[in-house]
Every structure is written in C-alpha cells, then in structure tokens.
Length: 385
Ligand SMILES: Cc1cc2nc3c(=O)[nH]c(=O)nc-3n(C[C@H](O)[C@H](O)[C@H](O)COP(=O)(O)OP(=O)(O)OC[C@H]3O[C@@H](n4cnc5c(N)ncnc54)[C@H](O)[C@@H]3O)c2cc1C
Image (cartoon, rainbow, N blue to C red; front, side, top):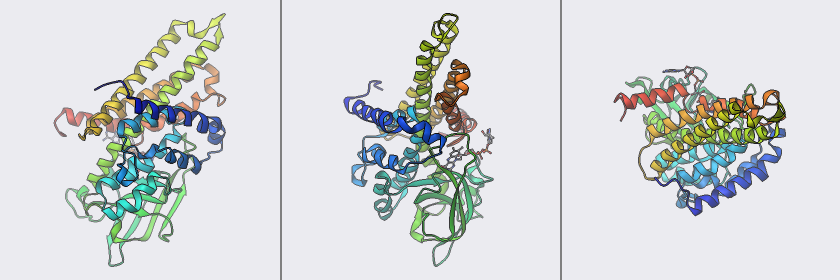
C-alpha cells in the first residue's frame, strides 16, 4: 500500500478542510450549546460531492472510493464529530446498503437523493432492549395483502426525527432457526405514515449538532416493495452495512484525535507556568508524542481497511481493528488534551471538553469496543474467516 495520497485525494482533502474551517468552525461552539442541527450544512456537503465518494456515477455519486471518503470525513470530524455523522446516515449506511442489496427501483428512488441530501437518511437497528445482541431485536413486520405491518420501537437512532427514509431491521419470521435467519431489512419512508412516530433524545453527553432519536412503529403499514434483499437476509445485510458505517465512525474518531492533538500543541506553547511554556516540560512532550503516535496508527489502520474495500475485498477484520483502535485513541487523545489544558480543559471556552464528550460515542456506536474485540478474536480463533 502506498501511504502517499495522490493529487486528486489531496485536492479533495483541501476542499473538505476549507469547508470545515469556513462553514462549520465559526459557529460550532454556539451551535453545540444550542443543540442546533443545520440541514443546510448537510446540503452543502452534498453539493461538494462529499457523500458521493462511495457511490458510482451511475447512481449519482463520484466513485472516488472509500479512501477518498475517509480523507474527506476526517477533515470534517477534526472540527466537529457531529458534522461527520451525515456521512454515515446519508451514504455509508442507507445509500451504500441500498446499492448493494436493493432492486433497481429502490436504487433509483433513493440513492441519488441521499447522495444529494434531497432526502435525509438513517438506519435503525438498536432497540430499548437490543444493543450488542442485534439478533435479540423485537420489532416485527407481518406480511399482509396491504403490505408489511410493523410493530416495535427503535432507539438511539442517529437522525431518526430529521430523516425522510430509514433502513430498518425487523423480524419477519419468529420461528426461524437460528433466530437471526428470521430477520429482514426494509427501506422505510418515515414521513406521512400514521403508524410511525419519531422523537428526539435530548439526554445526550455530546454530538449536540447531530440529532439522535427514537422511532415507534404502531401497526405501521409499509409497502411490499420496501423489502431490501430477500426475507431472512436482514442479519447479513445488517452486518454488511456495519462494515461500512463502522469504518466511517473510525475515521471520525481519527479526526477527533487529530483535533485534540492540534489544540494541545497550540495551547502547550502558549500557556506558561514556572516561567516557561508548559510545552518545555518533558511530561507534556511525552503526552503530545503519545497522542501523535496513536493518531497516526489509527489513521493507517483506517486507510488499510478502506484500501482493501476499494480493491473489492472483504475487510470486516480490518474494519474492527481500525474502529477499536481509533475509538480508544480518540478518547485517550481528548482525555489527555483536557489534562494538558488544566482548568481550561474543564471549560467550554475551549473545544477539548467537547472532543472528550464526543469521543466517548466512538466506543459505543456501530458495536462497542468490547464487541470489536469479540469480532477480532473470533477471526483469531477461527470462528470467522
Ligand atoms: C450517539 C449514538 C448514536 C447512535 N446511532 C445509532 C444509529 O444510527 N442506529 C442504530 O441502530 N443504533 C445507534 N446507536 C446505538 C448503538 O449502536 C448501541 O448503543 C450499541 O450497539 C451498544 O448497544 P447498547 O448501548 O445497548 O449496549 P449493550 O449492548 O447493552 O452493552 C452494554 C455493555 O456490555 C458490553 N457487552 C455487551 N455484550 C458483550 C459481549 N458479548 N462481550 C463483552 N461485552 C459485551 C458492551 O461492550 C457494553 O460495555 C447509537 C448510539 C449512540 C450513543
């Protein structure tokens, strides 16, 4: 693997960096305080082609690839982890999953509008009693002449109440053995369905500009052609989607680790104690060096997984390694940054406390750090190949 980005990727990186600095950074602290989601930022990112990297031109993308998507996402997340989330809920989750498993009608109906942010997307796996154990979900879709009738509830869904469309996972067969073979995937229009209600979750630690919510299905009738893939393929589809959304979360974590380090380097040179900049103390230097090593290692793991995917190879193991390491690196970097900033690290006057709050999400979403280790060890022990 060549570690040097080519001219095209460097140009995309530059565009994303400028966008983050000019369009996101000036308002981010105020927006975070007000928990403000700005649809126009999602639209502008779409107009710059950010969400189209992993989608072929035929379906409205630019086909630049997964590595390109990683490079662009990192630049956005470096300034704000919240604003890295649309990459997941527009394309890495819904659009890419529809591209892989959808019918031509579904592809034409949803992919380009998601890439262009004319539709807002989300994906719904998690339920009040179902997190890591995906197969334990209770949402059920009964096939009738009118369509599939959904009952159940999803929670902790990014963008739930701002989304137009969701990739939803539900059981269509409760008797299947093993049980996960009874799960199916659907592309569900969330608006104008009297059986579907959404609500925001306001009790969050961070990611205040990225809405999170719940979705309730009460005898919600969804047309037959909403089925994604075949009945019973839901678990397989879910795992294939997570390979993509996980990688996108991993690179957002890299962005946060980098942001935390850059702020720390700056602050350590400005802040003086004992008559000299705190950067002159070896203990501070060691902390900065450790952050740099972990940031670079996390990025290289992300790039390795992305390049493998761009070569058309399965990358589940590499994705889990990258996601685990990057999440831990982000939390470590943000936590160290808060230490380096002293009492100012404890203040919302500087962004490092936001980095710490936001970074904690990476240890949870798309499979917790423990779950990534379960996956990694299952490859080592020959349970997965
Ligand atoms: C900000 C945010 C955004 C999210 N967005 C989405 C979204 O868009 N769509 C969606 O579907 N979900 C989303 N989620 C939900 C997220 O995917 C789940 O929270 C996650 O899968 C963990 O599930 P849980 O919270 O129920 O934890 P649990 O599964 O209850 O786990 C609790 C603890 O037990 C540990 N644990 C569980 N099983 C094992 C095991 N086998 N071995 C070792 N340890 C284990 C976990 O590591 C964790 O520490 C989001 C969550 C957050 C916080």
